[in-house]
Length: 540
Image (tube, rainbow, N blue to C red; front, side, top):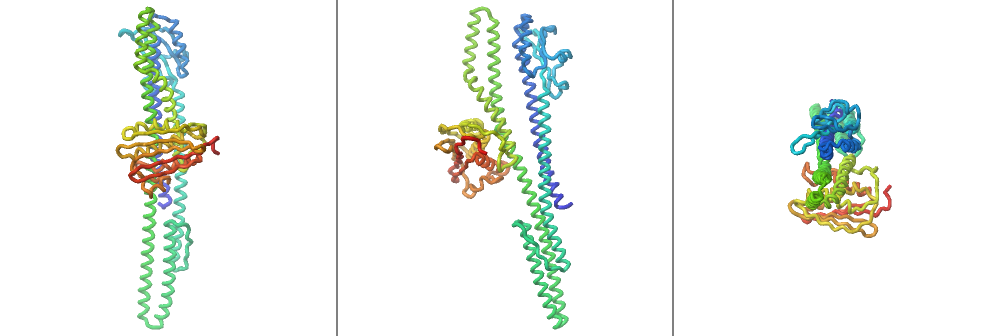
């Protein structure tokens, strides 16, 4: 097997394994998340519908039940809904006639659904007695279509990635084997007695060094051959005994030539192994970096969803209490129930929940968009995607949003201090600015080994906006500062950093026509400054 084929197969195999693992894990997570969300949503909708229609079922108010069924069918994902009595008698129904006509069977999970409709139900209990049930079906075809589309895109991207890796491997293998063929041909000429060999030297890599050594060897052989011929003429005129000495000298030169060729082959084999090892390490660190970068926004979104889940429970309890209030006719009982509702709302701090809902939803959306931006940005460490729209935005909002995202990571060992001045709106890509600030905050937190502080400030001098992140951590050695923005350079232990975070941040800042400055002293902390010009329109 040739060196070129080994290079192509080796790199392609590693890339294929990593791609398969990454794509399969991503798709499995997408399916499980959507399926669990569908089951929870169906259960919640059925339970809420059963709670809403309980009074009408208890009072056999068929007109109200028809109105409830019609109202719940406004949900765009519902295919049908029906209300049954305690003996299975039909009280009200609406929706797709074909779905209503088929026998009802509860679906326990999404993968087992074969007709594209997730069927669920909820029992109506009062005082431990079953007074009926509600049945409904949710359309899952759109969710399945999106999952299939994600599978197709993942397969297409994986195919493109494998093609690029194969092309790069082919070009690299062709370059290496081409140079080796030239050296092999020159060595064959020398072994056949043609010592007038001078190979062209291209570049300054290891192969160029070997070529120079080969030319030096050929030159030495030519000189030795010339001296040998001169000695032979002298030896012929002297005596036969000197001819044996010339023969020994010639054999010694041949042995040296063979030793040089053997050393040359060992150097080439070692060089190929080192190059392959370096590529494997870079690919492995890049895969670990993708998981680390995506974990931050995903964790934040999950935290927000858990908080929203608690708020939903509060609103459900209030809704049930108001329904009970609506059913009361006695003024004294209504006043007592109203007092209970107001006390519960005050205990749950309903005003805070209402104000917090918009921020939680907005931040969760930004976190999901950040996951998309991170995946898009990592495909090329030297610059990020230029297609994201720029818009006027207050960069203080980027700081506040990012601080929320990293709060759980920093609060246990860092005190975060903010001093934000009033900033004018400037054209920028908020998601990318969030990514830069996130990288700086995470790096600052990792630089603090025990307890410390991180200070975040913003300032506007009339033409430029400056954002500064300062920590009192372990600092950076002077020799490492000038390499911080080099791709794949990292001061962290193996497996804890990819060396891409600051390289990506540098590309984002340059895209905004700004600059990033570093000041650090070992043992005293580090300060990163982001300086942006005030942009009145999106950069070209």
